[in-house]
Image (cartoon, rainbow, N blue to C red):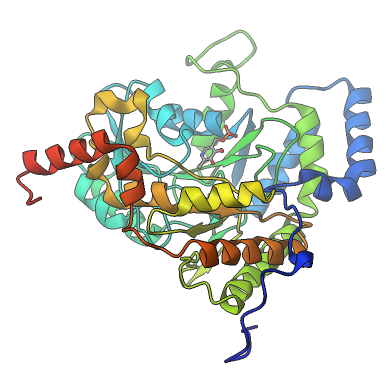
Length: 423
Ligand SMILES: Cc1ncc(COP(=O)(O)O)c(C=O)c1O
C-alpha cells in the first residue's frame, strides 16, 4: 500500500515513536515453540543418538525437498558446507575460484584453506550481489569454480553465471547461507548450480541453537562423496578414501531445526510484510536521502536482512544517532574481503572493486525479524527522519571516510596513477 499523495509527513517528535528497538530478538520466534523444542530435545536425549542419526536424516529429506534438490547433506556449519563443496569438486593449489568481495568471510576463506586462490569480483550496486559482467571479465584458464552468494535473501543473477560456467566448464557453488527459500525465476536457491551451501547459524531465517549447515546437490555421486568427506573421508568405519574433515550435524540441532522448519514459510511471509512496511514508512516520511533495497524481477526475496544505503558519508553518524536512541542496526560488511588484512598478499587496492568499496561505506542493516512490531518499525524510520532533519547532507559520497583515512585516499590515487587513470 502506498501513502496518499500529498499526505503530510508524519511528525517524528511524537514520544510514542521513541521506543527502543533491538536489531534482532530471537526469543520472540522461539517463545511460542518452546514446548515443542524442549520435547524434541528430550526425544534426542532419550534416544542416545547424538551425532548424525535419524533426526539428521529426517531433516535432510525434508530440506532436500524444500530446496528442490535430490540430496541434502547436513554438516556442522555453513563455513564447512563451503569447504566440503570445494573439497568434493577437487579444488586445490593452482586453482582460482571467483567469489564476490562483498560477502561474509567464509565464502573466500574456504578457497584459501584448500590452497586455491580467491579471485574477487565486484558487485551489482543495485542488489549487492556478484556482477555477472565481472565474472566474465575474471574467468581465466585456471578458474575452476564460481561462488555466487545470494546476499541478504535475494538470489544472485544466476542465468548469465550458469551460462558462462557451462561455456568454460567451471563449477558453480551457490552460497545460499542467507537465503533458504529464495527463488530465481521459480527455482529455489541451492538447486541452480552443482552444489548449494546453507547455514543454520541462529541469525539465519532458519536458525539452529548453535552452529549447523547443509549442502544440496542433484548429483548422486557428489552427494555420496560429500557424505564421506564430512566423516573424515571414512567408509566403512576406519577405512579412509580421502582426507576429509569432521563436520557432522548434531541430532539436537536437527531436532530443533525440524520444529522450526514448520514455521519457515510463515516467517518468510512475515519478513516480506515487514519489508513492505519499511517501503511504505520511508515513503510516508519522504526520506529521499535513503536508498532502499531493490528487488529484481523474477526473484522471491526472503529478507534475511533489510539493508538501506546512506550516501554522502553520513552512514556512521546515523548509526551512532540510532544507537544513542537504543535502535539496533548492523553493518554487513564494513570492508570488502579484498581489503581485509589477511588477503593483502593478493595485492588488491581498495579502488579495484569500486562498487564493493562504496557499498561497504554506505550500507546499514535495519531490524527485520519475525515478531518485529509496526510500532517498532515506525520508531526506526521516525528516528532516521529525525536524524536527517538535524543533519542535512553536506559532503560527497565516501568523503567522510577519506577524511578519516587519508592514507587510503593516497593509496587509491596511487593505484589509479599506476593503472594510467586520470586523477
Ligand atoms: C554469505 C555467508 N556465507 C557463509 C556463511 C558461513 O556460515 P556459518 O556461520 O554457518 O559457518 C555465512 C554466515 O554468516 C554467510 O552469511
